[in-house]
Image (cartoon, rainbow, N blue to C red):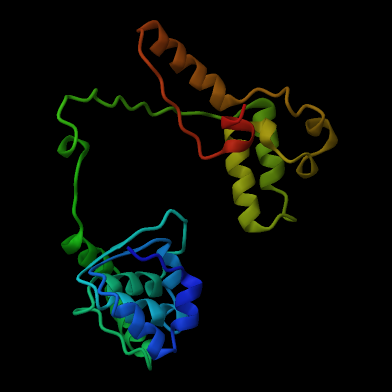
Amino acid sequence: FVLVNYSTLSQFGNLKSKIKKLVKLGCCYGILDEIQNAKNPESIRTKGVIKVFDHMDYLAISSGTPAPNSVIDIYMILRLLDRENFQINLENPRTAINNFYSLFRSDPNVIRKILDKKMLRRTVEDYISHKLPKIRQYNLEVILDKEHKETYLQVYNNNNIEPKLKLLRLRQISLDPNLVDPRLVDKKLAAKIGKMESSVYNVLDVLVKKIIKRNRKILMFSDFKEGVTDK
């Protein structure tokens, strides 16, 4: 097998002799990790990726990095996986992108339709033979009150916070008021950080106690690490 990093493809992108040497290695199976690094059709790196991997019979792409799913990003992924139906002229890549974007604007569901045709849908049962326990889902209605509510409202009404950061802070506070940045609330509430009750945790505690009484197991997930899963 051959390992090639993206920086090498960036250097080789416009060097035909170098690209030919990579192609002549005769690899038939390609694996592109961190595919978001090859999403710009006008970059030398992406052109290098296309020139090398277009000669392979099989291609797998993967990424564990959250990235915007713009029309351009999706088109480049489709182009790599299905070069027959999603062609692109490397000399003028914008033409294909603009045509695809026009198609998307006329029918916003076009991407879903394309993916539905190509997507392999599998379930856990396809891989695990023994019977799995059924998932029991609970919808918990939580009404913030007392200091939890006051903390949330103070941050919500603070217009000096950047919108993107404000949304994150509100998500954290909606879970636990003790996760608030003390600079975003008044001195009275800031002094109580670490001592305030969470309306969410109180409701969750009731459910947990019921489940434990039934001798059942509990597995909890959270999007937040600091102040939640690292406790």
